[in-house]
Amino acid sequence: MRLVLAFAFTLSTPPGDRWTGSDKVKHFLAAAAIKSLAYAALHRNDTTRRAALWQASIVTTAASLGKEFVDQRRGGRFSGRDLAWDAGGAGAATVAIIHWSHK
Image (cartoon, rainbow, N blue to C red; front, side, top):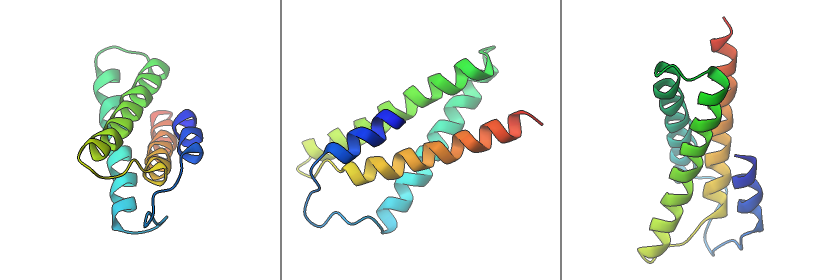
């Protein structure tokens, strides 16, 4: 996710793309859900915790970037700020996974 976050800040900001709003909350929650579900599915299939966490990161990054490319193809904008919120959601999920998987 660090790569996504770094990439997000190198993009030009489209006009009207604010840092806050309901769209950004959706990005945060969707990325957190994708990361958590991917981790659970991967870890359940006898993947180690560490490997499942890395693979879930790849799945989340692909979904986040894919969403932005789809938006762009549909005439919308590719938003680095959306990616930053995705990274935040994935990061929060990572913290939760690490915290609860060690109990």
